[in-house]
Length: 391
Ligand SMILES: C[S@@+](CC[C@H](N)C(=O)[O-])C[C@H]1O[C@@H](n2cnc3c(N)ncnc32)[C@H](O)[C@@H]1O
Image (cartoon, rainbow, N blue to C red; front, side, top):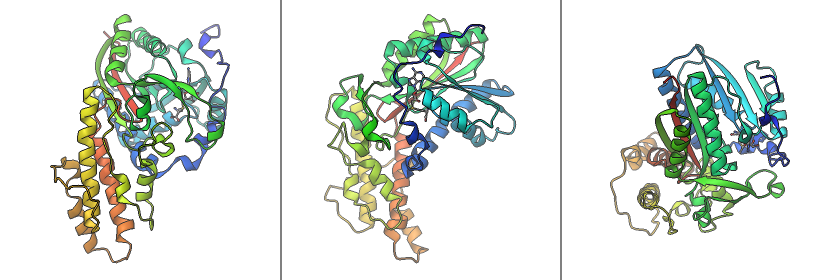
């Protein structure tokens, strides 16, 4: 590239100027983040890389991370290679793009000793570098900052680059789910004024227009962009992350009717702290939504509540809602049996807080990650697009 490409142009407002402290803060890493969210994202990305590897196994992988912040996407990609046991055999090159000058400044400082990482201040709406790339990554919902038309444009740029370079590539599209229980009051809108009031500097955060996506609509956008560029999609998958525990379940800013689920789940992991099981019960939202969303929440809430009831019953508590003894999915059957077995070998006095509660949390996590339908019913909807640019 000879002249400076236009994606280096700066946006006038840097919404993430103060948010950078949140990304550096250890407080961000609560139990939900480390035990639920990170392992879920890791498996989704590792699985996608594994599928790419099965078809095509290059010596090195080039990752381009959109809205990279301080480079969390690099850690995710590196952990995925570790998880697949290919970190030693595969060299990872990473280019992070972000239009927040503060984020890019901090990212450059943080990774200055690693020559395989580069960061550029760039607005992805204005174009993207078109060098060969196997993984067009995103995490932390950067595409939600964009309007639908802007997202479609960015996808068009990616498909064009894949075709030009004839690569086999993955596109990871990370957005806010439209039908999250965190914002039932906003379900009728696809783009609305969102505030990151869960950040350390909540009082400094302003409203930003954000797009929330239903998987069906996002898929149509992806397919349309690929057709326009005459680029072949091989497969497309969707995953919901954080159905019950998105950060706005704690602020309850857009749905005050729900209990603060994220805090309650965090407290299940807290040794010596007794959690009120009743607060975990979940009622399917009554707001208008497409029928797959309604059906999911109805069935999910019945199963979620049944697992909670089992833990309460084991502790001799009656939650005063009927135990319908509905058949549970295999991933969450046997909680009472497991607790009985654990009790036999446990000699301390705080079995409830140290064993029952974290075991219940693990069952609920397993339930969320195995039942998530990939519709846009969680805080985050992750789309994985497999593209073959060789044809
Ligand atoms: C919630 S942060 C996520 C950061 C990082 N990916 C992570 O997971 O920690 C979203 C990021 O998207 C960036 N962003 C928003 N709009 C963008 C645009 N048009 N071009 C490039 N980056 C953008 C923001 O500056 C911010 O750093």
